[in-house]
Length: 118
Ligand SMILES: [Mg+2]
Image (cartoon, rainbow, N blue to C red; front, side, top):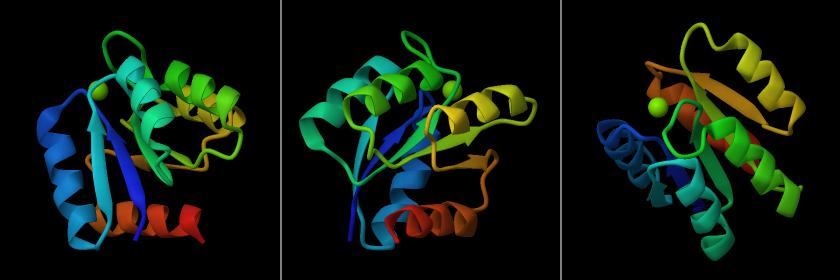
């Protein structure tokens, strides 16, 4: 079991991912933008972060960079949309461990989480 932080500005998506990961036995916490993600990361030290890219206040790429800046070992998986390839590349360069393209395949999300925890 891992503590997983799900970051997305779309509430329905957080709810769906939370249901999926809770069903797999994980402890899930949520944040709705990059700024909240950094705050929650520093307070809760989750094992894995699933991070949306396009969000208000602070986007996922900026939040990833700040989290990796304070915790280089952070396990961050980006949640991306089609057409965001250049941002995904930059995220991988900035230390993201993997990415899952939305609309996501539940098995792909679980596999990405398992991979970064291994
Ligand atoms: Mg978004």
